[in-house]
Image 1 (cartoon, rainbow, N blue to C red):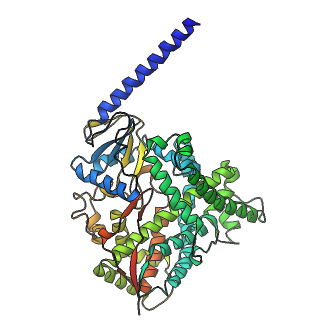
Image 2: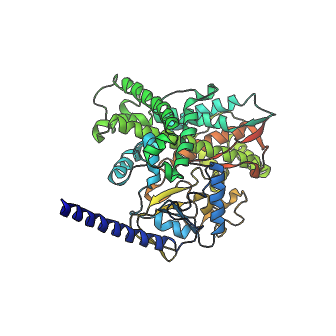
Image 3: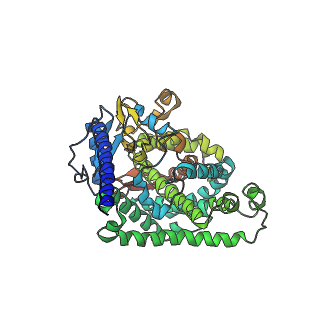
Length: 501
């Protein structure tokens, strides 16, 4: 008995010694990078702001402070984080087949999104990416244009009684984006634009805030603590709304599919089902169910992921673009001229060719995403030692690409706070470092829906500009960006609309 205890003690001491040795090595290497002083055990967790807007401001302050190095070290408890915001440092992280796994902080999204395309790793991610990529081929995106046009009509109509007064444009854009993603992702008409409130939208915002705060609080990382002293009950109520919404739609869609023949597959779905109705992303998943071995939970994970990534991100992007356009009359005049040259006095809806002609609008959207990227930061787990800026970043460090700071590097974007769409003309963009601008990430794990997002934003913003002139009633410094999972304006986007003659 005594011998057994002695052996167990020796083994435990060996493991502890190995852990301390590894931890010492990690700390020694990580602390070679610049960063604020950290305390034992809690690191920098005690100084990080809990409020989303304050945290975003704090993070940008650190990136300004350490702009010369392009990196900043932070400790969350005993876990090292390395903020990276220089193109040369970002490239080896995103242009790698090794550091593709999302960081452990994304695990807090698992109760909501499971291990769908956003949060999955390894073989599962490769299989899902291969399965889902055809969903965004050219023909399906062309079919989605009909949805974009339908919802943009409603969007413009909803604003008809909102002219010549100060309004918050953000809720109108958000509900339009929700109607679009529900229709394209699930084939479901929810008429969010016609309803004064949306429990789903409220749940998305609250869940985003809860997850983001938990990511910054190591004492809430263990489930038992989060569920007792944290916001576990609020989290579960949100989850009930979010999952209840998507599960109901999936079940309804499954029932509809039963009326079609059993010989439909993912390869002939366009031919057989497409004749009857417009296809949604969910249809592709349901018909790939047998071939890919997808369960109901697998399907819900991907639908939830697309609902989150395809709704909140585009809504934020269009809101920031509206504010910036409304703050720069010279830019807006060029946009009005572009719309008039394409459409004249016609009230027809835009075609694919029309969208291609909207060059200046595309420059404006890209410049808006430079200043206000929908995803202000994203993280990767370092799976093996990597060299950045002549220093070793040890395995198991979390690398955080701070998009907002990366996009403000004066080397690639002179006078970086200036809104200048001309930065993205072919002649000005030519030769720019490919990793200096990554609003949709880059490399193998880039955003699968970026063409979808650009099409949607062009349709909605062009409809807005064809019908109204926009005047921002807030200065940019009066709007606090809320840097949670998505970069949203803390108190909306206030504008004054004037109907165009």
